[in-house]
Amino acid sequence: MSVVGAPTAAAAPTTWQMPSLEGMNLADAQALYEETVGPDGPWLDLINKAPAASGAIIAPVMWEVCQQAPKAGAKIAAKSYTAVAVNRPGKC
Image (cartoon, rainbow, N blue to C red):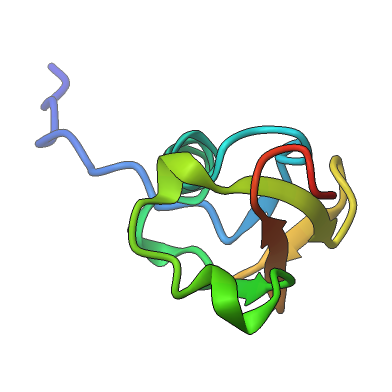
């Protein structure tokens, strides 16, 4: 006779693949990034490339991702540095 044990929780991943974020509006890029890495993934740093007169990033949907680090497809871990550079749409 065999005894079935209690189900075990799946371990959270420790590495992820950096999604392609360039060209997306910042709101969609942040949502995709968070969906990809979840709560255990690295923080996504935001770099504002717009002139100071453009103001702070208050409405992410009004900003376009111009560059990202690391490149799409790169392997990232919880301690990896990840960032996107943003500007107003059409200003990349």
